[in-house]
Length: 256
Image 1 (cartoon, rainbow, N blue to C red):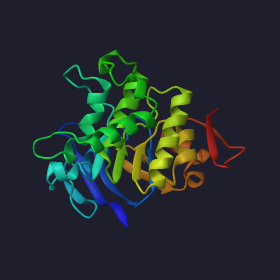
Image 2 (cartoon, rainbow, N blue to C red):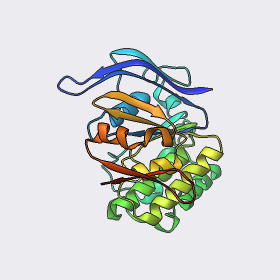
Image 3 (tube, rainbow, N blue to C red):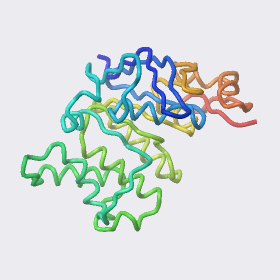
């Protein structure tokens, strides 16, 4: 089943950047990575998929529907976006931030149930932040905030999770933890579309990778098809040396 289907997508801001003739699809249960240099259109594309932006032309379907036409509450039960721009205006605790992920599922009166509380606790535990639940969000480090926002997405319990830069601000242990969390979510049937700047993390966890440049799709394929020296040089404008991971056999890219 196609969870995401995009055909001939065009989008442009009033000034400057545009997406041009973007086409791809994502299958149910797939971990689909998006890579490319700054300004390639990766974040803009995620915002279109969650319904924040509307394309000027083309087909965009999430679970067979145009995301910007669906009721926002109903859409929030199907797809969530882990953004890099999460800046709450109020002084929420960590636990309260994660509870925000349960809002689409609450009753009219908005009272959390025992199950909601259990889901929030499990989500915090999954990202290693259960001991921080009474801490104020703004007192956390950038990496800790990132894990809390990811816990909020887990608590939202959507079939599709969009992640804008999975490993931003994370140390190596936290990167390893979130990669395990993502793999477990995929194992339970979740579909994940994630933007990566770390090519080697993308290579190790993704089923397929789409590489973008200047608002267009440069290529789509398995990690070993995309992380080639000639492709990376053409996209990033720098020379790479590509080797193989000694255990997984997947490609590892290093700047020369």
